[in-house]
Image 1: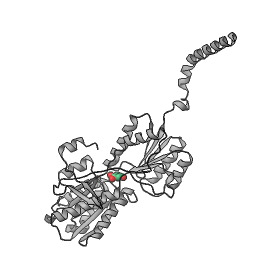
Image 2: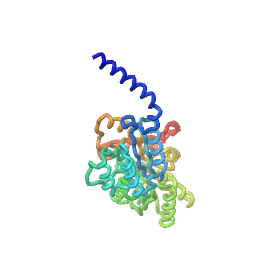
Image 3: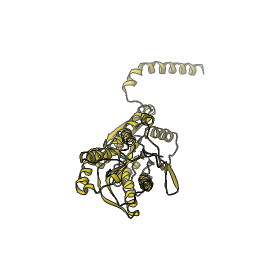
Image 4: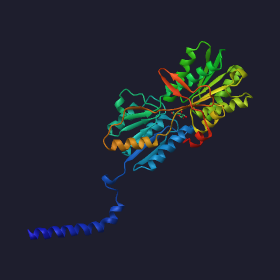
Length: 352
Ligand code: GYE
């Protein structure tokens, strides 16, 4: 008995000594699985817009402050790059994948591979359209169709308030074709144009969510339709910046006085720059789309680490901004949504 106790003490002592001794070598070796940090691979669409840059910053900042390691990949607006990134994340054996898919379709095999590797995929912002919804764990993003409906409702209310009954010609500068944000916003424009007898949607073309392409498309519209355009529907703020430049360079004015020949600009995102132009009345109404996903994602992974299963489909709540004081709220189907005026204070506090 005594002998055994002694042997125990000797063993313990040996263990302590050897643990001191191997400390250095332990540091040189890869950490044991238990102490390894959780790794999250994030496949971002690209860096095409202010919104996108804000989304990247929000996610990188939140993860830098978290216990998780973020691996970031910029897909440069190409689905093939994003699929490649997903495969690389699988090879690296990450614990989670976050995907903001540039377009909706074509993800089935890559997501199947992630599922087979046992890696949960969280889809953000734009959606994926897959046969089997269990290929991703959760999606969180905006209701883009509703955003478009809100913009169109605002326009309809504005024309009513201003007793504008003449024919109205609209042009659309679309986002990246096939992206959920484009599909929903374009659909709302097309449906609203079809629902009004005196509205004509002259043309829609993609501006790929960039300022340069937005400008090019608007220049073409102005050459083609001359003084016929009353409204330009830009599917994001950067396209609106480009369109406003093109209008100015063509010697025309942007603003809400359609009857005086001004071209009314509608935009989405409500970034800092977009809201500045909204405050100046150059963008008539700016429908918000929030890129601030970072903290939510960290929280979601915290919860999943605790064994909780996130909601499969979550919409973010968003606002709408205008400098026109005549419309305080608009109705879409059975819901009313407030329209906020942009003030200096609001601009100062704006996070993106
Ligand atoms: O509106 C645009 C960005 O998917 C909601 O993508 C996002 C859109 C956003 O480039 O600015």
